[in-house]
Image (cartoon, rainbow, N blue to C red; front, top):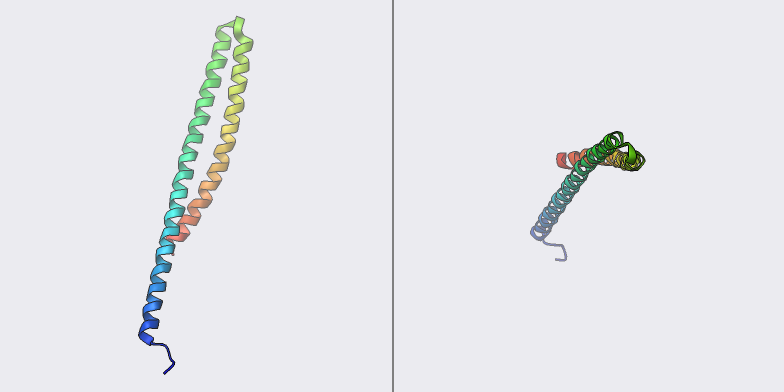
Length: 111
């Protein structure tokens, strides 16, 4: 008389399982979204490297063309190179992060 109804237990197991699946799918979607954001950040960092490199090149070229302002343009080129190095460091960090997140997302998708 005091035993639980087997049909209700099965229904509860099915609901729990369905909820677990939905939570897992949401976690995968969140991980994929985070990966896409990290990939976008990496693309912007690559663009920054290129941008600072071309600015450094332009300043160096200008320094050789205008000897009177060479010191000023050399300083600009040095500043641009420092920014380029910082951007390259960011690219390295983001590349590692994207690689790790890609492995994680692929594992989640397989499950």
